[in-house]
Length: 396
Image (tube, rainbow, N blue to C red; front, side, top):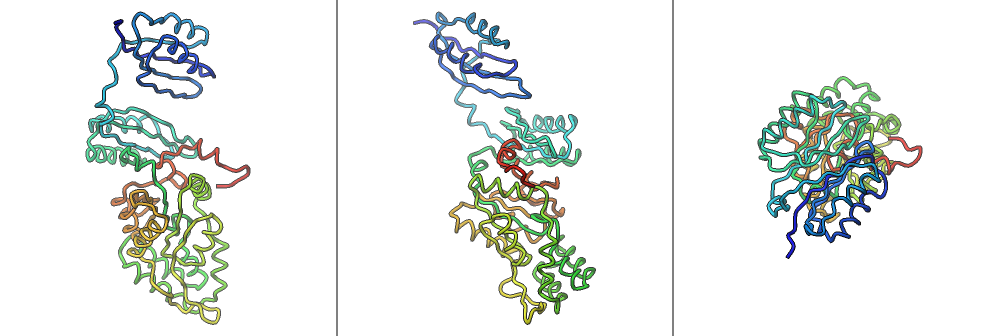
């Protein structure tokens, strides 16, 4: 019986239609068996690697070389060992790097951290270049805790965001995103805007600051702040609605999630009139928030019903997941303040977005660039895919 050889065929050059099909057609004529194959294109240049098992008597490398000459590409051959069954069993991580600017020194530090943790970079994919830069690295063989520690130190040294997730089915199967509102979905703190309308800005802003960093119990601080709004006319809420500023990338973020079939929910410690507006404008499936009591057209300084606090936010995430029949490991929660901590902990992936330090230290990962759609990179969605979804003339 003729001996079979395992050959790695490496192809490189300017990409054009027909290269892959032509190469595989020649291999088919030689009755080769394809054992592994990977292809990618960077700035119009093709890199294609094919591992084949081929009958030594039928191997006609000159046909492949002639094909390469015709196409203006380089083809190299290397005898190798067949792919082993052990390779897929290696622990794999998806490392996502995000920053306003990613100089080579920062990327070198990331690569060094991965190597230091015993990891090997199998694949690098550029996710975005502007207005932020992002890369996804698939890493095999690294110790989980050591990898996270080393990458965390590199991220701190270079002022970049680095997210580490197991490269498993669950990462690519997220189905529900739950998001906070104030300073997350929007750039404002709504109660501070209401306080300006009531002439109580300084008192309320200080209480808000202390509640968001965890110095004050959120529920108690919220009721203190709402009490300061007593007597404010209800029309002030509509004026605040008109002043709301979406976080850059918010529309694109929600639109892309909807296109991908995600369920989406707003869970806010703010107020229902605001969340109902955002739900309608952006197309969220669910919205939950506190209800301001209004009597004779004026705020009474009290809330109606159960307060949406830290504990309640986590309960609502679980409630929405059950309604949508989504396992918790397939949920994503996004927030910035101490009252989001339980919700972030309950989700399969908890993301601290431009958050207080007390939140970034315990969340699964953190994003500090000011663009909400950068979170899509953590789900493995690249900017080119997002832009293909963008309607003509649509804003962010």
